[in-house]
Length: 73
Image 1 (cartoon, rainbow, N blue to C red):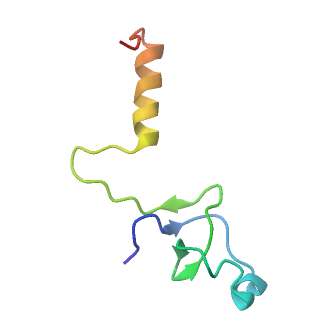
Image 2: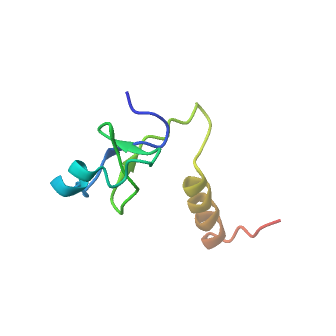
């Protein structure tokens, strides 16, 4: 079971050298149990409760509203 913020899928894979030397060993983020850092294309485990939205989704909704003519109040 992935913890909050762990990488659950991505396009970046650690090289054997990185795994052998535990290059990211002090990172609290893990991918398949191996410490890592975030990379472009990663899918991150962020389990929000019912009715909650992420910061990125909130920003997207705000931009959509603004482009539709709804101005900030």
